[in-house]
Image 1 (tube, rainbow, N blue to C red):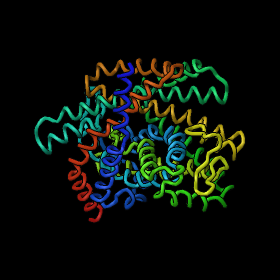
Image 2 (tube, one colour):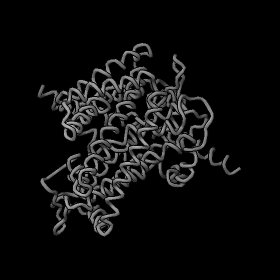
Image 3 (cartoon, rainbow, N blue to C red):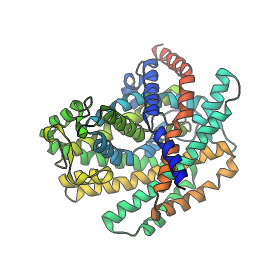
Image 4 (cartoon, rainbow, N blue to C red):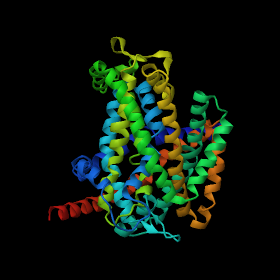
Length: 454
């Protein structure tokens, strides 16, 4: 078992290590240049499209598709991931999270364009799409040959990751948060969670989307408002906070003499973990959108990184950096009691909004984790459907419900390690397909913008 753990650790180290971070970063840069930074050129237009009725084939509205994809990303990455990036990489890591989000918008745009363009209709009449399809169908259409292995590889990685990252790790986080705030036994939380998840996923993507488009906006607004209250009260500390972010983004001094590489690595890695740009999960949800225009959905999808990282992660970072929990005497970072992850975020909010601040973080984590479990079930279902068949995948919902309960009461160190590794490995086949099919994305965008001018 030790040897197996060592192998998984090595895979995880590579999946979230410097090589993969450079590949993800470079892909975002290439796609940003090729689309002429479409994610920010069309930012206002993207919000307009989000609330404009779209006609076409599909199972859910474009707004619901975005909310469904966001429900999988807004959560532990925003609450615990930001704190971890700061604790391990210093305030400068926030700057690199922003850079990742800026470039990630073009990646999300491209993923959604390809997901809609190469989606198929399964035997139940639902739309199925994502990297498993554009890595096989798209590659075969453009380059010939048999690329099904590349799509299968992504689906396999995504399916394994879904069990841990998308289910058991989330239910474990919910059980811990509820136990911490209300002293409720984990098995009770696990039972309630399993029933609630089962009640939603039994209705498929339409049911998941209906819940996601209600939970995500409400919880995001509550979290942002709570954060803004704290930031407004501490407005005199904002200059110092931004000074720490920009001043330490290129020095590495924030980690007590640590290397600049640590600042960049933790900032980029946690940024990617937060918004999942390049990992290939979000396009599976966007493929279900009711639209006949891939570029239209791609523009809407590009909002994902902006809302997830630029808005919500920034709120978390500024609350932490304006609190007394974190100080920078003589340029060296000190954190009270060496807190990290969700504990650091909770302590920062609780110290500035006594009582209420802790609930914002804890219950934000609960509802975001719940919605994450719903969307990741869909990702796992579609991945299993691609690998096997729709008939086999239909049994997955019952396994998913059981794992939700097990995750709440079990120790998940091994599950976390293996699912974290496979979550990162998802990027490999996705990035290959994204780079290879980037000319298709650029041509589609050029054609779409040409129509807008006429």
